Amino acid sequence: MRQLGTAGGGGRRRGAHGRRWSVVLAVVAVLAISGCGRKGSGPPQATGPLEVTAVTVTPRDAPAAFEFVAQTQSSRQVNIQARVSGFLEKRVYTEGSAVKEGQVLFLMDQRPFQVQVDAHAAELAKQQASLDMARANLERTKPLAEQDALSQKDLDDATGQFHAAEAAVEGAMAKLESSKLDLSYCTIVSPVAGITGAAQQQDGTYISPQNSLLTTVAVLSPIWVNFSLSENELQRYRDEAARGLLRAPATGEYEVEVLLPDGSLFPHVGRITFASPSYSAQTGTFMLRASVDNPEGVLRPNQYVRARIKGAIRPNAILIPQRAVQQGAEGHFVWVV
Image (cartoon, rainbow, N blue to C red; front, side, top):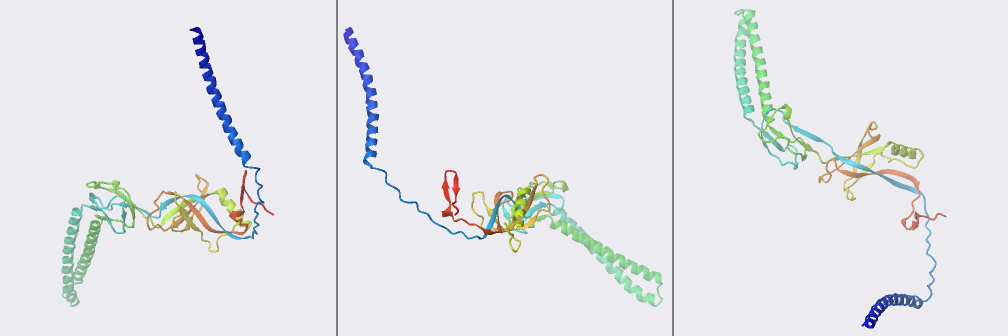
């Protein structure tokens, strides 16, 4: 029985050694096969001479472009405020929607203002009647005074009453026009075409000078694109211009292309319309503004974009064709002969 146990133990050891040898043989077989493949492929084939292309580079004027981080701004943002005090009856527009110039935004309760219009209209009618009476009295008094039938004092009194009645009529007319103007302010319209903001006051709120702001309307076209140059950048451009390495456009106008956040090019090109008269005390940068048409409203205020400034020229620039640029371990390079 012990012999059987020993034989059995030796069989287990031989089985383990056999598995290890099987793995080794498999690895050797793979190496042998790969080695045979290399031997069968023969000696490495000789490569032919490298193709070399000679390119003649001629200095010529080349356009220069500069890119800056920019932010959009509405060219005109209007605060819509109530001009009279009263109850806000209804908001007519949809918040955040585009509106046209003259479109109604809010309606206020018109009844108190209509009462004022009617009262001042009645006052005007009364003063007009007084004026007619004073005119008739003056017309009777004047010929009698000329005939010495009435005294000069009577004529002076009639003339004074007539002029006082005229002034009263003009005052009543002014009050009537003022009340009509207040009545018209109950219909609040947008003075510009643009995009509306959220309503600041809800229907039924009493509007006074303290809470007269109702909403805002931002003009989207044209839209402004603001970007800044650091003091070092601006000085570098000036130095290059002084050394003849950079030339401003003949017309003095630079084109501004807008690159959207996804890298695509905005279809409309703008022009620089404003340059800050001084550097910013907080950032030490020089702010420039471009005006860009935005008829579809793609650009919205406070959006970050990139501004590409075009129009400058680099005189006698050396332009290397892309095919002449090679890439090595340390980057791109060009052989110059």
